[in-house]
Each structure stands twice: as structure tokens, then as C-alpha cells.
Amino acid sequence: MRIVVLAGGIGGARFLRGLQRAVPDADITVIGNTGDDIHLFGLKVCPDLDTVMYTLGGGINEEQGWGRADETFHLKEELAAYGLGPEWFGLGDRDFATHIVRTQMLGAGYPLSAVTEALCDRWKPGVRLIPMSDDRVETHVAVTLPERDPAGAAGERKVIHFQEYWVRLRASVPAEAIVPVGAEQAKPAPGVLEAIAGADVILFPPSNPVVSVGTILAVPGIREAIAEAGVPVVGLSPIVGDAPVRGMADKVLAAVGVESTAAAVAEHYGSGLLDGWLVDTVDAGSVERVEAAGIRCRAVPLMMSDLDATARMAREALALAEEVRTP
Ligand code: GDP
Ligand code: CA
Image (cartoon, rainbow, N blue to C red; front, side, top):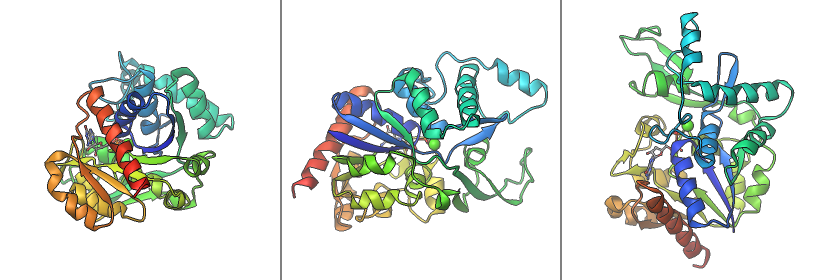
């Protein structure tokens, strides 16, 4: 079975581990979000690609969900001693090596997709990991900076990099607009459209619907290819009990006018894209509303508390896919 998964960072990566457990023989292609990418210290950092690569390759910091296991921060401390920031982005010594290799290869002329493949030669994630695009896309957020903001122009309206919004400000102010800068001009990376066209099923893991899956869908051609693939498209809600399980997805959903409920996220994707949607059992009351929107819906446990629970979620998603395939 050929499965295509559109993934952000932690939610996507953890789901993928369950999917691999559920269907060990499946041929899985992951289309990774690169809207979170940022240049730091002259290096190209791709947080979501790396989270997937490290998680599936056994190098992730399990408690944190991102970054390397067994990490130290000497390099960052030395840079800070020279007054070089930003200090708010947690780049560890082991992690730095990945960004150095990536930046060197990009500098030598390799596209990000080829670089990602080369990095995966080491990590062997067991999936084919492709960035959504080789072109630069960076998600930016319009905010009014907090009144007491030491690092910024306090109280001023500004457009900042998504990482600054998410990591430095911890989404503490409303996101007034979210712009995937460069997305409109970006082309899908080699292999993306081919993987979608050749898929037996397409899954949206419980990744952020706006700044992870939404950014991937903003690359012209990807949304259309999924809608036209003619195979089941099934998603799993990252919103459980009217709140994100982890992180601040409610803030970015509000920015695009979507309430933080499992049903509203399904409607946001829409029946033009989604055939099936899984909500958590606590949201069983919203199944009817989702089905009224033309999307087949089931309520099942959606907490990725351990690998077995996550594998069960993956099986439920694939079962729902079969159900919508044979109406
Ligand atoms: P990021 O790039 O690291 O933010 O990760 P993703 O975009 O892939 O996923 C983030 C989303 O995963 C958040 O909105 C969380 O609500 C969701 N999430 C995290 N853990 C769980 C879980 O156990 N169950 C469900 N249903 N969603 C989860
Ligand atoms: Ca991310």
C-alpha cells in the first residue's frame, strides 16, 4: 500500500511512528512542511523536516518532541558570549551538525529535496521524506508586539517570522494574519505530485491545520493534486475537547477565522479535500456536524500517549479510508 502523509513536526512525526507500526510493509511518502524554516547563524534550519527525520530515525529528544537526544548547548553558549543571538531558539551541538551539512550542500547547489535525501541516508527514517518545495517559503505572522517586550519594539504592529511568534513570544499575542511568504511562487519539490498521483490513500496526521498542513496546501498544485487523486483522503483532528493537544494551534486557527474545534477544522479543510475525518471520543458529539459537511466521520481515541495507541489511530484512519473507498 502506498500512503502519502502531509506532515508538520511533532504531531506529524509521532503519528508516522504509529503508522509504521500499524502497517510495517507500507510504502510511505511524507511531504514535509518547510514554512517553519529559518536562517540562523548563517545556517538553514528546517525544524519540521528534522523532527520527522530524528523521530523516525531514533535521534529525537523524546520528552521534548523536537531536537536531538543527549544534547548539549556549548556552541550556542559560546555564540551568546560573543553577543550573537537569537538565544530563544534552542539549537544544540548535535543538531548544529545537521544544519551545517544542509547549508554546505545547499551552497554547493543541491536542492533541499536532494539534501534531505542525503541527511536521511544517515537516519534511515523508513519513509521517503520530501520537502513540500525546494523553493524558499517562510511563514510570517502579523502581530502587535506585547507592551513589555524586551526584544522588540513594544506595542508596535509588526510582521515577524513564525518561529519568533511561536518560540520567542510563545503565541502570547493574537496572530492578526498568517502569510506563507513565497508559497505562491513555489513549485512542489520533485516527487511530490508523483507521490500524490500514485498514492492509494492520503493522510493528514494531527498536524497544525494552518501552519503545517495549511502551508503545504498553499504550494500551488498540491491541493489540486490531492483533490484530483481519486483516492481516499483521511485526516485526524489535532484539536481534542476544543483545544489543541499540544502547543498553541488555537492562536493560528483564530487568525484564519476558524474556531478551535475538531468539527470546524474538518469544515476548514472541506469536503472538496477530505473524505474522512477522525475526532476524539470526547468530541463524539461533533460527528453529525462533520458528516453534514459531507465528510465521513468517526469518533475514536486520538491521544498519542504511546506507540500502541498511536498505531490504533493509524489503523482507524486506514479503516475509514477503506470505508469511503467502497461507499
Ligand atoms: P509542530 O510542527 O511541531 O507544531 O507539529 P505538527 O504541526 O505536526 O503538530 C502539532 C499539532 O499536533 C498540535 O496542534 C497538537 O494539538 C497536535 N497533537 C500533538 N499531540 C497530539 C495527540 O496526542 N493527539 C492529537 N490528536 N493531536 C496531537
Ligand atoms: Ca512546525
